Image (cartoon, rainbow, N blue to C red; front, side):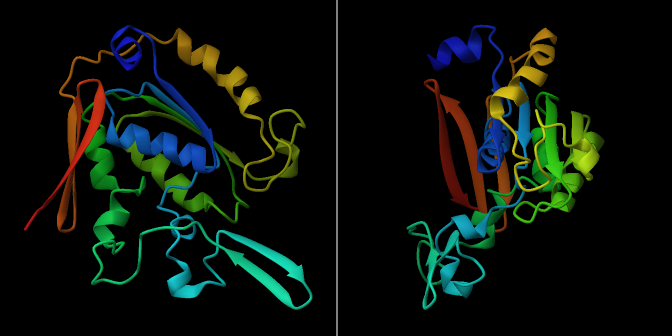
Length: 229
């Protein structure tokens, strides 16, 4: 199936909202020879510590994934179970290197990615987003534009932009339907000629003391991590 998609002339277009949009951008980072376009709504650009489980070790009231005021005397702070930890002596220590490889907003990594295809990036984002800061998305799209990518960032900043069809509010996610987002942008992207995919199917990112290498082997993406020291 993957062989047919990757080599059969069918474009690979990734679309997602919030965390799904973040994963779409992350896929383009780790396999830039595969992805042909990104369409995202309200994705964050930096590794979301609140969703990695261990942030409760830092401050469980500020870094919880979900909060529920269960009753007058009970507040619930909920976290995803994770092996990651803030303990620097643990093999599961979430170090700067392990954060950096998960960050989309990293200019040096984007520069490496740009040596492959210059794919289109489309994003919608509210300036009032309290989960995925708009300033980070704006900086990401500035970097992408400087590096030659075809970018379009829709800045949602006032109630006049709420049309009740695509954009329904100014909050995180904009109340947007993925189906409506796809119908708006997919036809135009499909009209674009498919970019050449005959390139080296391997990319390496240096992150502090670690080097992450992603390589396509036997129709799979294989990861190797080595110490750079």
